[in-house]
Image (tube, rainbow, N blue to C red; front, side, top):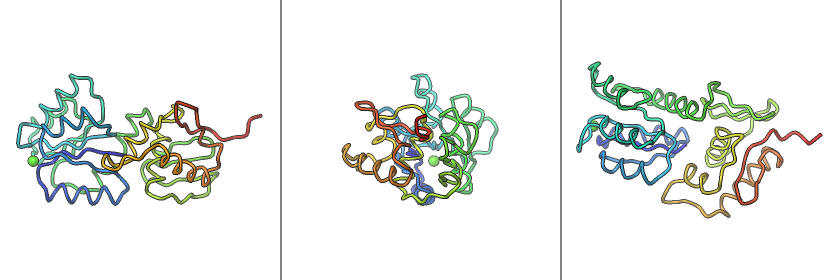
Length: 223
Ligand code: CA
């Protein structure tokens, strides 16, 4: 999961990045609305964490512009304000959820995971593709009931494919959502990591569609 954190308070931003990074999320940062606006329009994210009190304007104003321009990604608003009117303005601008400062970082993580799951159209926290399960809350993976151990990178790849399933995901889309923008891999690197995932999950579970990309499938042998 790749998330843009828009927060001008460096210490708070550092703490959130560390906690969410430890949970396996990829974080990119912006410290102003203008910087966030540029990134939201040029990079691919799964969600945005948006502080409302930014140096170049209220976060809800930037958010309203994104929504007007058809940008649909989930937005979790962070606000130090407890006034009802500020929360209402955030929702009115198009926020999907909010957390009031001070907050537990675990709460931000749980809300983000639920928002991303919902944005892919899933209600149940455990995604099932045949005998494979991916728990969107804990990140744990099982195959036919047995736990499967994945590296952080493999876990991000599988999470993206599982949220998208049964849709086909191109290598370019995977590169944007699963890797840091400063370290976007060429397609060979993705192919190698998909091969490692296949060894752990069973080759038929990740289908390659030539010229299109990958998708997770049931994996049951054809009748
Ligand atoms: Ca602020």
